[in-house]
Image (cartoon, rainbow, N blue to C red; front, side, top):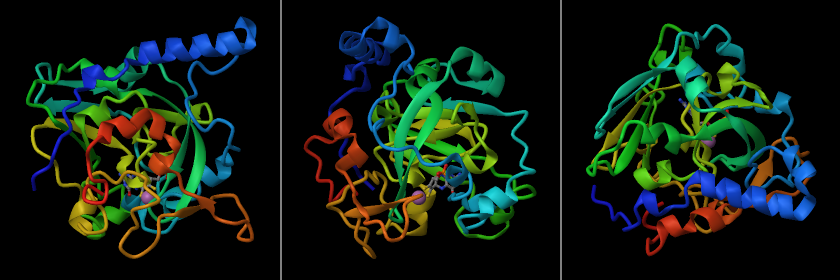
Length: 301
Ligand SMILES: Nc1nc2c(c(=O)[nH]1)N[C@H]1C(S)=C(S)[C@@H](COP(=O)(O)O)O[C@H]1N2
Ligand SMILES: [Mo]
């Protein structure tokens, strides 16, 4: 498969520090220094929406390693061992490394990021994640000039993950991003939610969150990150290439072949509540549309 990579390099994207400084300056300017000190450092978009209840976030999950039902992950993941844990980062990098969970937590302080998660199935939640920009971690391995894509590989442990004993997907779960998407400050390695450590059903101990893409791009229980030259084939592309593309940007104008993507149901709403319109790039167009300039988003779905 060939793929057109827009000529934007990740170095051209506003670094997080500048982004944060600009935002905290704006906040300070708008409401005074005292008030701004009490805000989370950086909460990005969608903070005005009502947060989804904790109970819903931890009991309505997609995590096929623990079964395909929405309540399966909360029921089947309690014995999953999240410690010890480490992530290996390898491939097109000058300094490959294996880094423990404890070292990650020490070197990359988490902050709150309130993001909307929009599943390809047509539902959404507003989740107060804890996490840090993945770019901070990726910079420590010094990607080479050949690194164009990043592959994320989740853990393979059929003895602990009941879903992996059947061929629901081709295990281990694999996802991928273009390098500039992975380096974007909105892309986080999530370490928690609602100020607590991640529950197993939400991808403990470390999972990705890419808020402008459909939920399945946000891989749970990551053990390997591989920087590669060519576009990786993801588990979902293997499962149905015409239904799940590599990009999978939230886009109300590009329907899934079997259903519309124009609207979504917010988890926690009553079934009498109307569905809500889905926003381009899940509401993050201002921050990420530039990554796709000149690309036909119907072709690169
Ligand atoms: N390893 C792994 N990661 C995964 C999945 C999965 O089945 N396995 N499901 C994805 C899908 S389809 C969605 S919508 C989100 C759901 O995340 P949440 O349960 O924290 O809301 O996780 C994504 N990450
Ligand atoms: Mo999903």
